[in-house]
Image 1: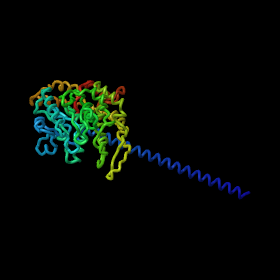
Image 2: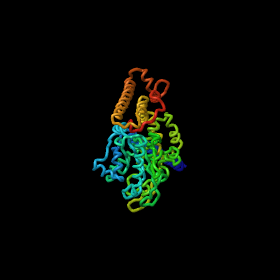
Image 3: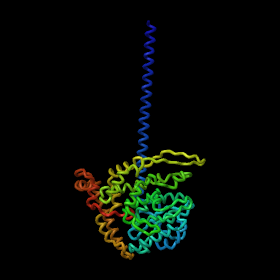
Image 4: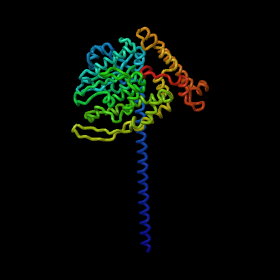
Length: 450
């Protein structure tokens, strides 16, 4: 009897020990999982912050110089000429910083020619039809606006972006959204041409299906509206209608769009163009969100919020072929929740919001001077005079803002803090500063104000 009791007690103790060990192990595994998830979440947050800062960098500096060709030289080329050849001939005007782009845009007129390449052998325009349409559009814009041809410059990717060094080319391509948002006129060049290798018809419809073409259209439209966007084809040059763009869902840059890298299944390619565009597209959205109280942006903001999942897809299907021609497809992250993270960052960083709104909108004082500049001004003296007045207004506005921020940070005057800070009824300071500058002012090209 005693031995049985001992056995029962021993078995009970052993069972209890096993239970304790099992529970302990489960708790350890649970806390390890919690720690792992927390670490993973922290890594994702850090990655998101890196992406946000990379996007904001595209709004304040150029990753690559802005190369332009003088209008007269462009018309005399006879065809699109490779960037390196133009560089060797000294035919390129180079702008290294956004401040230089701003100053140059004040005194000159810049045209961005956007087009789809019609061959794979390095010749983007094998029929020269696109080049002829560019020259026709250039002549049209100079005549219609009364521009001085000596003060007009052109951007065309084959001539303005390095072609031989792929590393330099990649940097320049990353800067295209910044380039396209900085010019005074945007021309989509879309004459009907058969692709040299695929025999596919290249025209206005196929243009709006291309990933990069959509991106260029959207970046200029968001920064400047559609008032100076044009279509050039065999019929001539005509305004680009916003309704037409919306019918083609151009805001859905990443959805059902076509790109050469995806067509080639990324063989021997380090990065898909979709991922390459995350930073510049997110940076352009930062401008829009920072100016969300502007009445002239109300429609576009509604479109973005309505179709956010299509405009900023969380993931995409990435198809690639390795060196052995083995094809694999996997789901790859794209924007994830970066749109929300960018909104959160801007809403909690007043200086960032101010800088972004300052870049996309002229102050009330500057707007008067901008409207006073005649589009048909053709003398260099007149442009220089207008630029000096414009520049002094920009400097004065920035100095005034820095003075107010300095008083707020140093605590000089509680009244100043209540007026420009977050105090006083809980109304954020940026709204009050913007109210002082005037709502609904016309948008300025990003390049104008840097």
